[in-house]
View: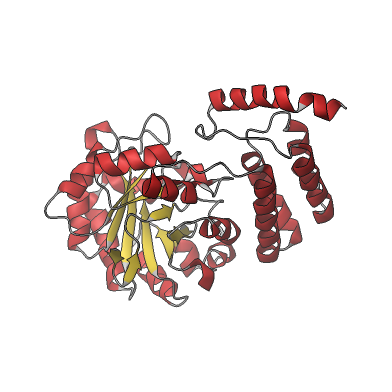
Length: 357
């Protein structure tokens, strides 16, 4: 078992990464249904929290079925981080996470997120302020460093453990890389191998197949894996990874029927949480991922991102389910062009004649 403070997780837990404009309660719900062991909210601005900004306050919404759940905050000011930590305590999540990894310019320019990677002393002070002002286990998500010349994660891990964090998630890229290139897990492994490090170390970056998850588990020795982009529109990645690690066998990909069912559930939860107008609008970013790999799906995607009535959207999803009934997906990595081409060939052989009839 893996412990983060008083939180007990299974051996080699799978974590859902906090992703801005993605990791909201509706998305987290479908990931939890499919095996995510620990999830986080979207990151929340410490300045926004202490100003009572509506958008920031909204992100504090958590539900019992999500537990264990962590709320993630970011900022570059010690007082604001301390005050926001106290605010987070009031909604009773299971842990509080600090974002020192977001690479986007609007966050970095404020001296927050990955912007803090250039100043280890500030990172330590910010973390200490949060630990001091929260009763929750405090964790951190960060990157290897600012750029190739300043990969300081080994020092950072020791310093943050010393001021009281209970776990560390490391994305295997620098801020300069953004999300480009291949994630380098070698430094993550060095942190885990450091005899001074006693807290759980979770690896993040490029895990998009069960095979890669098992390979990285064995090669780099991390305590668990955090999955981000691969879960967007494909929450089944969690159950597939678990099954492969436990059995060495690949689960069959979800059927068209299951994809449509989960997409509808996601849509319904989005409407319940955000209201019909915003709920349907913000769901539009997910349809392409749920239906990825279905040949000739462009027409249906076009309808789904323009329709404004719930019944009309559901009718299109029902039509997709009927048209592609029996379509067999491959186990190739999500988004792999070779896989999509193979699926197209399969579809043409098996279904084109049927649909022209």
